[in-house]
Image (cartoon, rainbow, N blue to C red; front, side, top):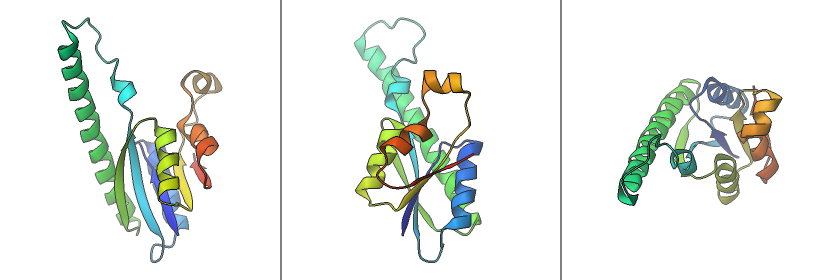
Length: 148
C-alpha cells in the first residue's frame, strides 16, 4: 500500500507522523512525506510600497526561496523523525494550495490514504482561514486520516 503524510512542521504534523507509524506496515507499505509551499501566502509579504515591479518580483522570489528552504528543512526533520519510528520514507515538496496539491498528488501516485495533522482551530478561525485538513478531506479521492 502507498500512504502520504502531509506535514507542515508543526506539533500536529508530528502527531500525524507518529500515528501513521503506528498503523502502516513498515516492511511493505510505501510512505511519502509531503510539504506544500503556497506561493500565494508570500505574494503579499511586503509591508511597504516597492519602487517598481522588478523589486516586487525580487522580493517574491527571495521569499519563495526562503519558503522552499524551510520546506526542505521540515521534510528533512520529519524524515529523521519517521525513520526513528521505523518508517522508510521518501519526500516530496509541492507548490500551490496545500489541500489541492496534496489531494492531487495523492491521486497522481494512487495513494491508498493520507495522514494529516490538525491544530483544532476555533470554529471562527476555521471559517475565516479555512482548514487544510477539512479541505483535504473534501478534495481527496482516497481516505484521509485527520490526527489531533
